[in-house]
Image (cartoon, rainbow, N blue to C red):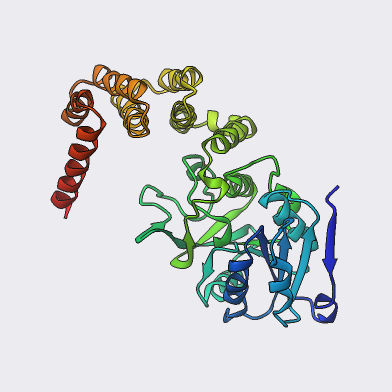
Length: 358
């Protein structure tokens, strides 16, 4: 049972039931939480409540939230840290609105996000359970628009498309609250990829609608759990066990998934187990060129991370598996001249390739 402390001084004054409940989980983000709340308060759609779920912060998050004198803000505190999925679930359970949105303490909504999503819900049938938007992922000075180009089906029944990989982030979705009764809430066992696993389940029962605009800015936070390789491996294995029957219906997606787990295990220096997953993937999809590319990725990453021996071995395996790729032959050869030469030549090669593309 989750132990929580709820401050009702603001929420008690709400008389009208809001249509939208916006849930903001936070943990030691006092320096960011006010900006996150303000991006919601600044929405052109105003029929909402904000539920800040403080997941056991040790900083002054509570103090910052309580300075914001808006009766639509509710503050709930976990007495101990339970993780983002548990915090979001607490928010869902406390929500009064018929529609649920999620904002993260380090993300930024554009002002018309909720208004545009609600307008879509007003024109579609009850079969549509989720309306989501495009978003910009920002890392340093680089901006990447998501969904990716490989995503061919973005609306309707997108379950098979989601099996290929994640392209929807939690702060981009607006969900009918009733959908959680049928599909379930966030899986609190997952240390990563909770957003992907949730939309996988939702897409089994409901159609999705997509707004092709970047109505969300999402910075990549290197100090978050997202940077943990072990957490990703644990999450990938758990998702596979939960959705294996669905993956089995699409052999290419299953092979890709096995390759992914194998790759991350190898990058975490769990070579033997990683190889077992790569072998499973190749048995399902015996594409030597694809296998060679996976070996190349592992080799390059291991070599760059100073695991020279294993990195070089994988680069050589990449060449042996598919010896007709000049790039692989070149990189494998360069690896014998040491890391300094390898990094210098590889960097110049990437720069040259980018100039050609331009």
